[in-house]
Amino acid sequence: KRLGRHSGTGKRKGKRNARLPVQVQWMRRQRVLRRLLRKYRDAGKITKQIYHHFYLASKGNQFKNKSVLIEAIHKIKADKIREKQEAEQRDARRAKNTEKRARKLQAKLEREGRIPASN
Image 1 (spheres, rainbow, N blue to C red):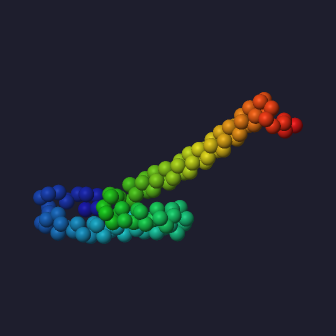
Image 2: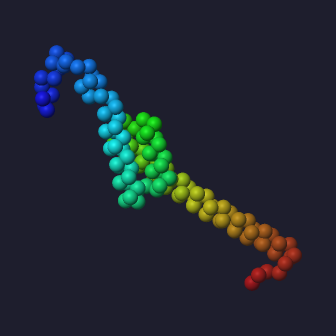
Image 3: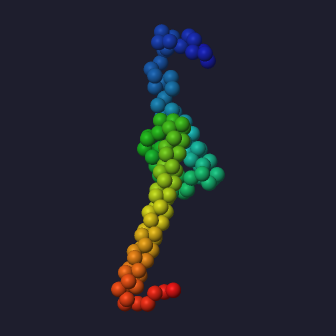
């Protein structure tokens, strides 16, 4: 039976839900997903905010199994890292542009003779 023999439709006496109740499947899945989330949170792989987000999402039946949940976690972590890098680049670009603008203004004022050269 473990290999799947002798378990075809002709051998079954109960309805599908009687053989393995949907509620039991649900409880097993929830326990697996919550155990994984707890493990990731305790290990520091995810923050408590991400944990809470995925906890509620798993309760809302968004993840079919453990591998789908792991994939979603990796995706959201990659998104957060990318957003952080983009923000750093944006800030660096802004700082560089303001510096450039200040230098241009300084040079213009020196050319017009309003203020003496800083040398």
